[in-house]
Structures are given as structure tokens and as C-alpha cells.
Amino acid sequence: MQITLRDLVTMIHGMLFGGLFLMACFGVVVLPHRSLATGESAILTQAGRGRERLYLIAMVLLGWAAVLSGAYLVYPWYRAAVPAGVMDLGAYPQRLLMSDPRTAGWHTLGMEWKEHVAWMAPMLMTTVAWVMMKYQGTGEEHRRVRAVVTALAVVAFLAAGIAGEFGALLDKHAPVEGGRVITLRQDAR
Amino acid sequence: MKEAREAVPNGAAGAAILAACLGCFALGVLAMAGDGSKAVARLLPFYGPTGPLSGVSTVAILIWLASWFGWNHTWKGKQIALGKVSVVAFVLLALGLLLTFPPFEDLLLGK
Image 1 (cartoon, rainbow over the protein chains, first blue to last red):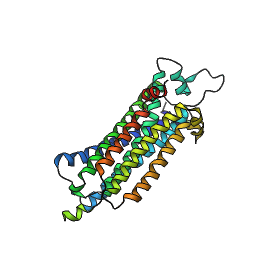
Image 2: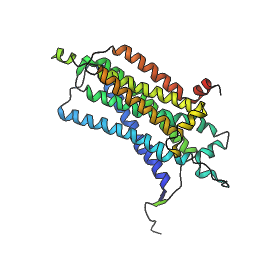
Image 3: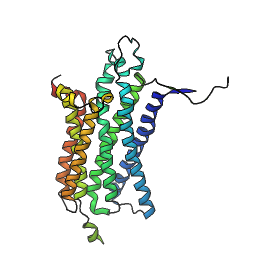
Image 4: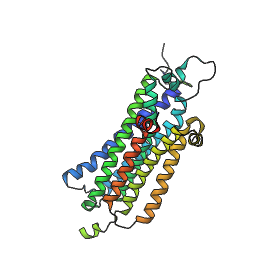
């Protein structure tokens, strides 16, 4: 049972950081929306507030971990230049996609959009988390603040969704793989 | 009790919201500038292996954080017209989103 280093890092970037961030974003979209829809603001205990802050901080960290690992670890492997004389483009996903007009769009639309729109999600969610913590427990008087923050969270969720979806589709068409082989489990045979 | 709550000013929230949307707008503008101008594209690779994306994202983050700091300094502790600030913020955010969308960017660049 083996996996290459690039496979592993891509999986951590997309499925661990990105996937959990997307789920956490959805939670943040639902929470303030629920209180807006019901006209009630949740009254949390001190411990509840603490756990909510922890959730928001973890979400923000996951968002930044996803974009930073994507931009500085996975993306350089994706866009690596092909050395002279190399004919097999398997280790050069961007070049592989661009080499065929039927797959070029995955780069020119998919990656070109994903690589930029992805950064908006942690920027917006950092703001959402900060405002939610700053105005935690302030009640009905900041209803408008909560409405605006919910709208920002929806946009961030969509941005993260676009990035995640294109990331998964790109990896399906031209996976980032290679590098050191890591043996997870030795076959008994 | 209600009066005490109403005294919590919304300025800090407005500053954070507007700054985040300005950061997103800056991201869109820089992405398009990097794509449309070779001179700009040459300035943006702060980290070679990542290419222009490293400069686009770093500068956008710096604009976001600097504007957040500035507006927070100005509006902290004040009650502001959050409705107007939000309209401006969402216009910036929508433009930022549009500018990162490759077909729209290509349309503006005449590609």
C-alpha cells in the first residue's frame, strides 16, 4: 500500500484542509441565518462562547492552510516547466492539459479561476469569524451586521466550493503525482 | 439592558467588511493586470515556483490588512452607516469575483 509524496500532499490540501474548511463554512452560513430567520439570537453560556470561538478559529486556520498549501506546495508541481527532451507529460499536469484542445479548458477556465477565487474564501471567512467573535452575544441590535456577515459567508462558501470542485475535477483529469514513494503498509505476500 | 447593548458601535464591523471586500477587488484587479500586462506579470512572481499568483495574492492580502487597520483605526468605537458601507463593499466584492472569472477577464482584455 503506497502513495507518492505529491499525491499525499495534494490529498491533505484538498480533502483535509479544503474539505473541512468547506464544511465549516457551511456551518457558519447556517448559524447566523437561523438566528436571522427566527428573530432570535442564540444565548450561549460562557463555555458555549468559548467553543464557538474555537470553531471559528479552526475554520479560519483550515482556510489559510488550504490556500497556502495549494499555492506554495501543490501549484508549483502542477505548473512545473517540462525539461527539454521529456515526452511523457504525466508529471506536468498543466502542460498535459494544454497539450490537448479537449482538455485545455480545464486549465484556462478551471485552474485560472480556481487559483484566484480560492483566496477570497479565507479572506472573507477571517472577516466573518472576527466580526462574529467581536459581536458575539450582542443580540438583536446588530441584526444588520449579522445579515451582512451571513452574506459574506455565503460568498466565501461559494468561492471555496468553486475552488474545491475545480480542484477535484482537475485532479481527475491531470493528477498531481510523483515524488518520493511512501509505503503505508507492507503487503504480507 | 437594551440601551447598553445598543451602545455597541458597528464601526469595527464595517471596517472589517469593507476591507475584506476591497481585498477581494484588489485580487481581481491584480489577477487581470498580471494577465493583461507583461510588465506587471514580471513584477508579480514573489516566489518563482508559484509564479505571478504569489504576488497577486500577497499584494491583495497586504491591501486587505492595511485597509482593515486604517478603517478600524478611523471607525472603531463609532456608529457608521452600515447600509451604505455594505453596498460599497458588495459592489467591490462582485467586481472582484467577476474579474477573477476568466471569460469576463478575457472580454475586458479583448482576448
